[in-house]
Length: 280
Image 1 (spheres, one colour):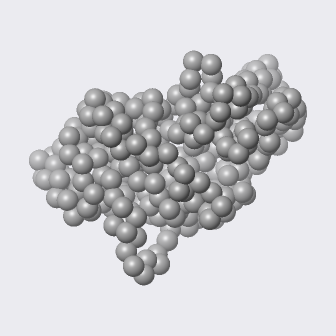
Image 2: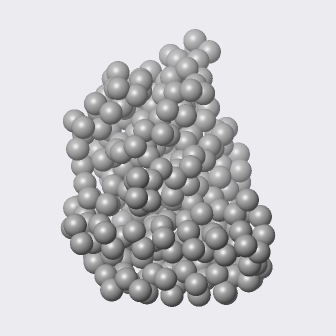
């Protein structure tokens, strides 16, 4: 397994693979890898001849008040996980490699980025789209793998690829959870023991909402209220949003049908966590 920090070196390797007729699977990450990331790598390994993982804490998607500097990093641990999982190449650039002096070009989108996380993180998805498109141009993957935990991000990237005719297939992969139900996240490391216990209110409340829908409830307002009331029973929880939207368009829906995204963002102490499910 190679680790490259320069774009030119990554391009040399992927261009050589392309000349050999090999397919490339790509998993873009911000590092501090866990079992959720490994599930994406495993899917990429299964589908492709070569696997590339990027590890880059992208400053463009963090607002000044967010946790860019404190975001967890451990390249040694990440490298071992990647090696054990059969990754062929890690791309680990520094910010100045991705954003040269005078950088002023961005990818933006109307519609899908204004609801859910877009309300409280207005610059976030512009940063995500810009870095992902740059990474696609560098790695030239046949398939790229994203987790459903970041469901809005998944929908945004799918739309960006369609709109801009990017020749990469986007593969969404299921949420990976702890045994007690908490969705795997690098930010879980911020939680103290009491907060870690309190964080279970996200998955418990979503389970309640899912059971309501499976029992026949289709009124979004009623399901949102049930999830909200449940989260509010936890003193350490502060709701950012509880919403139900169409997964493909990220627009609010009054009636719940197939492919509705039921999503929550909740502060547990100072840590913002997200979770969701998609109706079948």
